[in-house]
Image (cartoon, rainbow, N blue to C red):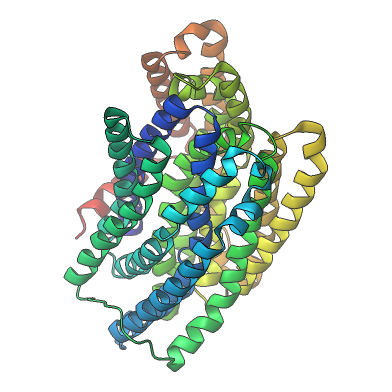
Length: 509
């Protein structure tokens, strides 16, 4: 499966997951609004997701996938290496989860000290203890997903997040119908979903010839090397999570801000997940294989086309988030317990996150350049730089502008982090350089996206009522997509040969 076709496969499943995720968030907003139960659940669910960045996507897998891919390419014992890594991760996370359950009040305090002294704190501790074992299941599932991606089997790994959000929707509908406690229903769904996700990718890995079971891990030379490579990546993930920690801490002191920022985060995570994460998932094993074969020309081509595809899809999405955030939030979330004031605050955060979206996505294409060379230190240094700038901005601005300081700090830090990664990538040689095609198309992509933004902004000014209902919003979004496609085609940002190449690659087995 070629890069574009693999990217499309991951993107479509990620899009389905985001659709179910929006359904979940719409229901939570309608049933719970920005009240204490919603805030308690969001913090409780953030805890295992925050730590999984250390032990799964953000650290362990970024070190594991290049090593595993190279063993596959070199006909080494990839299965034995994967089995040992699986067992070692399982043992560590069982112990870690047990300790976290005991320390849950302290973890909640570190994440949301603004909850202390009101009902949100005890609710969050209870929900956190129910939800935290999810880290064990999802981290093992992430390792298995890395194996599937390295063997170019993308469907099950990409479908796994969709299963999580689908189960959330089912749980909310059932709890509402049965008059169960909605907060506890959401909390108990988390570990159930983790078990389901692990089962899905385990079966897929078994069919691919990788049947992994917990065993006594062996501290082999490969495992020692994996730990050495993963340590800086874990520190990078940890530094990155401090950004989240600081943002949530600040938000916990403003009633409702945890919900506003979380929903805004969901909106900008839609293009980030569909585009950036899909590119990163496909790019890392592909670059690892190219470098193993000393294919610098091929590696440069893959890197440039990944950046190109990312920006073709990301920049218009960012423009839309900045230009029409209020209609997006109002149509999606303003119902039931979610008020007009909630809409205004959430829309402000959406616009700010939109300004940082291209930087978030491009980080997903730059970081694999370093991980493919087993260089995880650069990712740590870039995360450290981003964390420092984010914390400084939030602490300096929050007393004056309130909760929105978190979104501003996050977006500025994203651009500073990208700048650092670009600067460091120059020492990697030709494989990390922009080719003439990318340089030619970038300004055309920007021009087409800005022209699209002018079209949808003109419609909002001339016929504002059209945007504030579901069908009108769908029409405006469709018109925006069509106008962007026209401007991109007319300016040469996208050419007929690109579509023909994608069509050929989708037919390639």
